[in-house]
Image 1 (tube, rainbow, N blue to C red):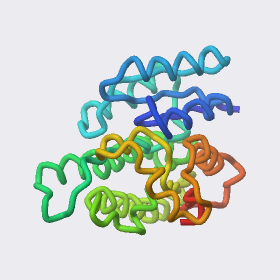
Image 2 (image 1 turned 45 degrees about the vertical axis):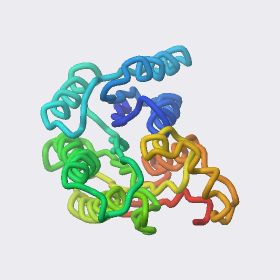
Image 3 (image 1 turned 180 degrees about the horizontal axis):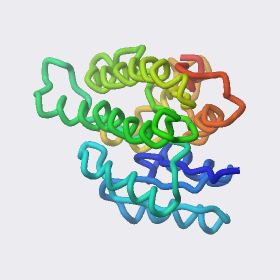
Length: 249
């Protein structure tokens, strides 16, 4: 069997970190990308290595094309040909209405969440596609329940960026379906991660969990399990699909 190699963007914390750890436990050589927090990224790598896995961390901002190229080229040299990409890196900013937002904020969110995911997918397809001499692979995009809910009063721009990821997932899945690549997405609901602090409300999950049918927030490892299933051969006939991890929301 050929070596299983995975890139997880934004893998130094939260959902990304759990995906990286679970992927390594499943036999992947894992590369996580991070922007600033080297200590957090190194901690994830150390945890994987101590558990007997193989991992590395690369500083790469998916909002910067040159960083993405460096990320993929580093994996090429260290591990070989990529077999799995998890487009997980994403940002949101302080909760506000659309009539309070400026263009700079929107540009930051759309560049990271949309353009970054597109460019990472581009590089993955170049390596995986049988059209380019590859042996196939799988891509999982991290979307959000916000793509359906819209994020009113809080993150309409973030929600819109995830709506774009949903469309990208469907279109790319059809585009590369005959080239050995499956493309799917997970849509997490309200999950206990640090991203809520970025929006100015660290305790947001506990505030809204009463509106969730299961009456609780989700855990990052629950999303990671869904991602690993979509990457696995158990999902061999699944592409262009969405797995909602939302507690019924």
